[in-house]
Image (tube, rainbow, N blue to C red):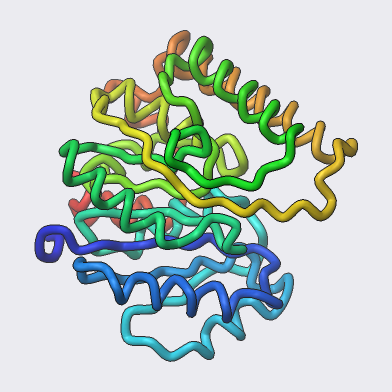
Length: 270
């Protein structure tokens, strides 16, 4: 059973953030203390053996903070799924560490959840009220991702990739056990599958984003990431519309990690 209505769980996937993680989590906690919802903050260290992020995060003492994780890096999507297995809220939000996105946006997303009785609210760089500092080539890539999501996966949103989103817990209970992508294209898969399963009340909300302009040139690594995202999007299309992998009838084929399977076996999936 979930806790009282509108309890909020916030998941922060963390990878190689030892120099900023204390400030990041403290800032998010202070922000959440100002909202009208009871909350928990779950920091998932995506690779405890890589640096001191886990040790530093664990030294922050706050009754609403839980720090968890695993030794090897598995990617943002995996970290979010891992964190979800530890949530208790009626609403579950994801926000990237690094503070490029102002955590005050969580409050705006919550208000949109209430206003529209939404299933999902995503932060959007292209919302008219958003305040963004964003390099030109990243705008082009975001527009390309929009075209891919619209025409390939039929997601009619201007921005699928901004690192802040909020879901009803019941939506995540239904969709996360079906997902496969652990890295960058996780956002595309989670939104495409949500829509496919009938959770169509998806809205965009404004955000404030101050992108780190250091190292924003178009190097080979960045282009490789873009191509991997396109490859993953094609894989989602194949599973969604060709083999219907995400449908209930294929439940036996879904791939679970240990935490997700434990959650399903205890009846929380239902």
